[in-house]
Image (cartoon, rainbow, N blue to C red; front, top):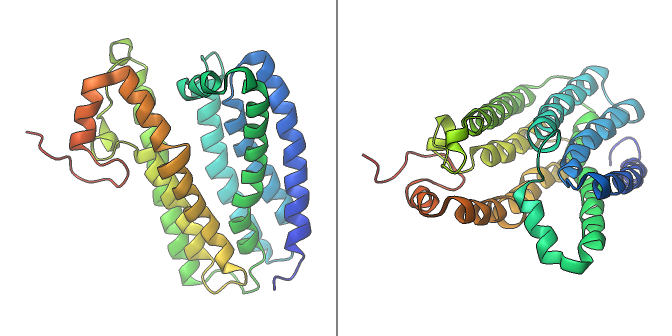
Amino acid sequence: MMESDPLSLVVTAYLAMAAVMVGLWVLQLRVRNASIADVGWCAGLIAVVLWYAMQATGEPERKVLVAALAVLYAGRLGFYILLNRVIGKREDARYRRLREQWGSSESVSMFGYFQLQALAVAAFSLPFLVLIQHPGPPFALIELVGLLIWIVAVSGEAMADRQLAQFRSKSWNRDRVCRDGLWRYSRHPNYFFEWLHWWGYVVMGVSTPGWLLTWIGPVGMGWALLKVSGIPRAERQALGSRGEEYREYQRTTNAFFPWFPRGLQ
């Protein structure tokens, strides 16, 4: 068992986030941009992990490190989404398609979606809580290995996002497929590095009480990206907007794991 009561911390975090997501749902009724739920998820994760660091028992040095990892990871991602999908932007096509699919129940269904984001914050905060409450002295070699994975993954995700944003910033690329940089080797390198980043916490938490909870990160995020809200929706949207060029991209380029493209001269 971990030294402090993790259940009460997580339940409190969930209830707080559920209330926050109600407010963001009301806001999206006015702005008609559901991407604010993604920004709220990032900001909420930061707030929850910082609160864990203040409330839970653990070594101060490790608390500072874990809190910094949460702030850097979620802060970068949230800021990117805010600038590229919210401020002055039309709602992401995937959300527009969901609204069409939901029809007359769109408002209620969107409320449920925002509440799922609150549950996701609580679930994906668990790896951070496990690391914060690690009873051992900082820092073992395995933690440094996990930190190295984190650095590679978060840097890779940031690079992929920047390459895509630069590609889309040019008007002549609006309906074209991005094959610049990391996008030459994977159709979704940002998703791959997002998933890889969660493995950093698994490695950092080896032999820690509650270690199995760190697996929520890569397993849960992998399932969401590969089967639910990530690649399936992005691929449908890309096929609809880019057609045959994207089908060729699918034929030559891995969907997830980066590798050399096939059949290109």
